[in-house]
Image (cartoon, rainbow, N blue to C red):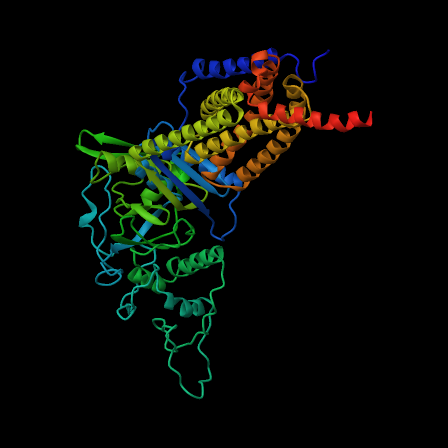
Length: 611
């Protein structure tokens, strides 16, 4: 009698799977790192993950080209930390930065640096505790970082503005701010209405109203404007978050990037550096800017940008042996803009502005400086000099970013999570094996062998994917692997139950196995196809760690099908040909065989009577 369909060459199929494992682990142990260590996520090994959300001035969706360019710059910036295993990936409209180990705080500071401009300083002052400048708009000059060979800039006299630039008008009235409580923004909300009227060249009504009315609380008379005005009641806030961001940026530009000298002095006097800045990274480089220092202690009135940060070719920290101090050495791609700037602003400050905040404002001691090189010195140590050099070297991005999520995991907590994940996987595997042994007797060993074979293949592939595509195994991925164990066991259950169905029809164990396999594989393929589609959809639509779960779930689904065809089915075919495995006490199918015999006997009695 010829063998039933599907029973041929089981040893050949097992040999194919064995060869597949040899190839996988040959690549693991004889290429690249030559170790079988999987690449772990920060929730398993400790580290920092920062998710950056791109921001555009008009609130529109960022382009993929700008995201890729930002990814390359931030990747270079993060790699400058010297941490192995750091990565920057694009996740939808976000950038996700992962830094293992204990260098996460530096990664956060580098990640938030977006746009860099070099602007001349027209006026500067110190911020008091309540916001604004002490003693009026023309406060003391904030000490900058001098260039070699000159005295510290703290001796510079206040109000040192560049000739020909915007300066406070003599005798200009200081806007009253004492009656205004601090608000959660960097400029007063009640100033926007009269300012908008002024910029729109609106004038007071020529015909006075019949009954004089006092200005409503939502309006404030502009300095120098005698006629009060009223504003309409504010409509209900129905703007989307993107529209609210766009509106906040426009309002900030209206006040802090005005070309009107009085408005500049008003913004400088009322600027509160302790509040969030809606203008961060979205200032117009072709307009003046009123802004704060990064530490929040100084305020600046800056002229329009003279040099874009992308013109900085290199920046490095070095120790000046002659002066016994740290310095930051800069090299520009084009020497002419820097020479022109330093020639125009000798003995005056120029500001390096990152994300609309002044990170350094040194005084130009010599000019013009030819050759496209310069050096910034000041009260630096090794850490602050390196940080400033990294900010200036990798400072300019095509987009501005806001940190939407930041997660830091200690190495101890990561190790605990890894142990918990391994224990959960072991418990799941043991539970499946016990169920198969109790319900299917010795056939459960075949199921367990298939699970072990699948586990070896999954782990080897995860190690290789970590090297080739930087795939990291995190807690969500371990959850996907554990669910994959259950799905693999489900394939065994379907196969074994199909064998039982065939034996209930009166077939022997030897003939029931190939016919049961023929029926079971259709059911299993349908189920695996649905699971694979679900994993693919989840991976495409999900973000963050959920992608790891979807990826490992899809990986185990594919390998489940491979193991089912190359391991489980051949083993069952070999068992069906063995007299030992055919015993009901071994395969656990004695009750099914007894049911088939009783069914035959019951069917034979009526037939005998009819004869």
